[in-house]
Length: 126
Image (cartoon, rainbow, N blue to C red; front, side, top):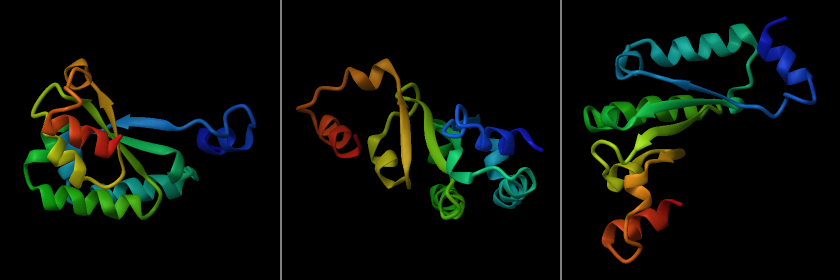
């Protein structure tokens, strides 16, 4: 039995999710979506309990391709978080376009004025 299946069957761990940091290089690999889906199938993992953590910097190049890959995985239940949002490009307009993100906020973003246009965008996504 794989650890995923054992966790799913144990009432104490069944609701735990797993977050995996993914590098830009890994995410841009042509077979990335297929590899993730194959790993989910092979391990018996519940895709709804898998969260892929992407870095903010990967979201500014080939944006449409990144969104397409995210959507392909999201249709299978995989979710995403944006790791260290606010430490790099810090564009909330990028975040608004992303499907199903849960940002991990940096102190830079927490300090955004709620009355600024950026603060308005922050309220839209929280």
